[in-house]
Length: 527
Ligand code: SAH
Image (cartoon, rainbow, N blue to C red; front, side, top):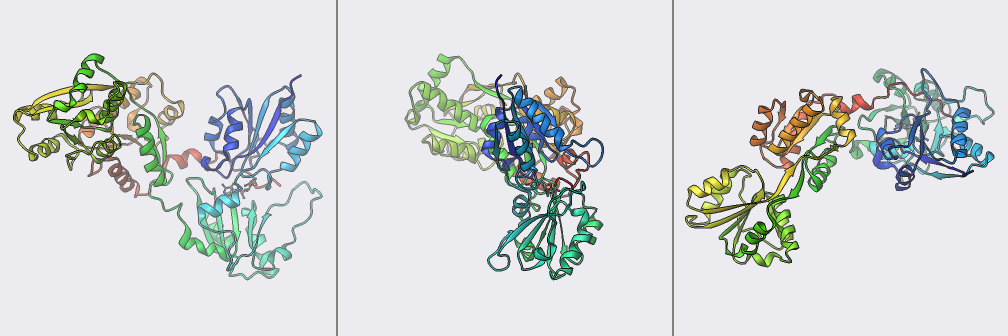
């Protein structure tokens, strides 16, 4: 009989970005995932679709899984030859019963591997801005459980007096409910009652909360805030540094779950911008771009690029697809010859530079009218030949206005927007349940596709606010009945990020904090 394998894997304190590459790798090969409380739902998505996912946590109310039940489940599956991932919060070796689980596996002769994780203390220290050690005030750090086992087991008692001595940092796992007993014990044993303390709840999660105080008053403050587990208590002078070092909680889009509807690599760029501001972007591409046009017709126009007076690129995609075609034809930037080049928007101009072309004109504004004005300012357009490589079915304003001024305009549809055949399930689910703070729409075609997607999937588009990039998209979106709540003054993605920040400055509760809030209260006991 094939023998399976158990990976005991640290899932980190919450933020899925904090798990190791190894954890992600073993999850990708899992046949069974057995997971605890406090595991971020995204981690479960990293296992193959067909893998079983079994929750085996301990909760304060309702069913609790006994340790024996969990080890039995691991052994049984491994004996069936399965690859089992046992996902545990933080690091399995720190108050994670690694010893008990691994011992049971070893005794049963089941092979296992251990993958470490970022423990809650490290997560809380980093995300709350509290270095756990410091050359000036904290020469050591001690992790201690604030919870004693209820089964009267034989483990050694905690020596509070020894812990109280010296000036090292103490990190209390669990025990947030027992601060009223623990803090006075430390004071009685000699720690200064004015020692600063920080309690960090749900460290590294978007709804992380921190309560600060001193040994004398922390229990009272925590009770006043109604702070529930999971929370970690950091005792020591280092917690004061938070005043300068806290970076996570103040980010303007913190925890906001935003749907990014751009296509391909552009989605990634926008998501990066949003992530830097603390948002949680979820990508759902509404359009796929693909080359279009009759091959020989497109090639004929591109071969005589040098013969135009102007070549106008109104988007990054137009540049991308033009150069893709040129590449296929074995050509490069030299085929532009003396033709002058206009790029709409700085991103388009930047991309052109990477292709070897510096645009002659970059209109200051990103609307059709500004483009026409900018070209006019460069000289007489009467009789000038203008090539506009662009999307099929784009707006006619630019060619029409240029024609009115006497230019000979040739529009070259070089790519087209098509609807994807399938959408990612996670994004669809979030939309369906209204678990999003906003949908971002960076073009009229995105607005149209989004409205169509909602209709096809029976999603009520009124449930989630829309953020649009500019007036044209706004008009399209509103005509389709979409609730537009955000539009920037500057019609760029950066502008949109700024407008979203203003919109959320009101501090309404995020869709995510509603989603990630534990449905049950985890018990403190794990030791
Ligand atoms: N093995 C885990 C700890 C398990 S004990 C680790 O290495 O982190 C459970 C306790 O860990 C909780 O009661 C709480 O004190 C702490 N904890 C776990 N995740 C936490 C989080 N995200 N924020 C604050 N405390 C956390």
